Image (cartoon, rainbow, N blue to C red; front, side):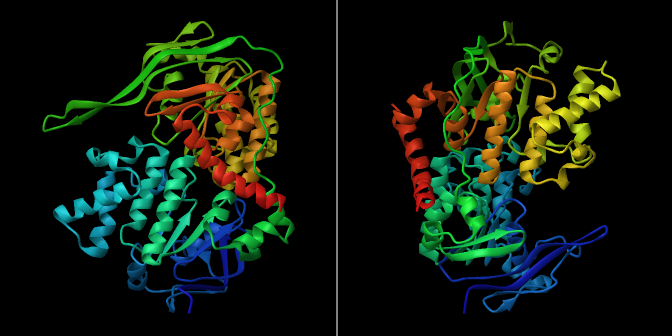
Length: 540
């Protein structure tokens, strides 16, 4: 008998005007100690299928017209609360895709990890704290032992993801459902987490249901694969067989869709636009009865860089290396020390009023498009908000025309401006975020992990879109990413960061083809190991 057996599972959602079928007659099984990957593009039904296992869908809006989900012979569809309580977080755990929205913003990381141990194991006091520290060490966060009172917003995206993994592994589950578990992680940490999951799987006989769009991870990690599109499994089988000889056209499309190539040669040698000189961002660590400053986190520690118009500078490094903090400091969204010069304007110490005239020239596209778009505003209002602030003299007709033009430039139907963010896929929401930045005709854009949560085919589309916009408007990009394939496809120069400092910088060709430092070599090796398998599969 399979550990988990899903038979003829269907999921539909009640919406005004009728029901929408999200999953249609899906069947699969997972054995003890096995890894099964569900792959497919956004909207294919893979996450909905996974959430159904733990009955976490918004019932009664979500319905199961047909299907059975049995875990160790126990039926989970329609199970009572006690049965689900016994299973959730103990026998079956789940790593969710978006850690910032999945973690409680009002609770410390210690409290959130401890909660699952208290509920299912009854741990208290020092044994509970010891277990929390052991879990942090297990997922590579031993450095947070002195920051157990930190809140999710005080951690990097990769650190938050590892907190989610620690919570999921706390009770050594029989089945781990991992929904994009390495999306926010850089390649070295990604490799560490996958190796950790593999070790725990071998040690405990844990089964893993992995939902991911990263085909390199699938080939390296999964025993079997189910390929989903439009709510159906169109192809399934052993991983090696699927990658070596895909049968379905959709599977072939997925395998050939990853971003590739190198950055375009700039049309002209742009003038210097942005530079920093010994830029520093230090966050105080407070402790003791009076909350005095005891030390500092040196998130950015003496960074000097320069960027020309029409050029892209890629910033890579592990989670917590200071990449996002650097981008926020350059835009004066957080305080910093050191020089920042933009087009002849010295920004160091500039206040809100000083920065306002420059905001239209300096824009940002955030990592999480769902979290950075207001759910209460229509797409037209989101994209047009900057025009209301920076170009208030525009007539309603002219503003609407600019909004339509921005949406069309990013490949969205201008008529979609009347809809809301939740009505779009992840890739479409990221296009909306890009349109919001581009509608002001900026000269410099910070792109903070703009493709990390997107399917490989959508990643390639976004990279092509960013290249087109750069050529058209001579834009300068500061591109922050852990995906080295995307960095190579878009960036002319690369800067490698670790622990707030630059360990290596140079042209993209130099960094990728002839890295000098051991850290950069480790980054390239980790990325290459994940990519080369994928390339071989495509060629096969």
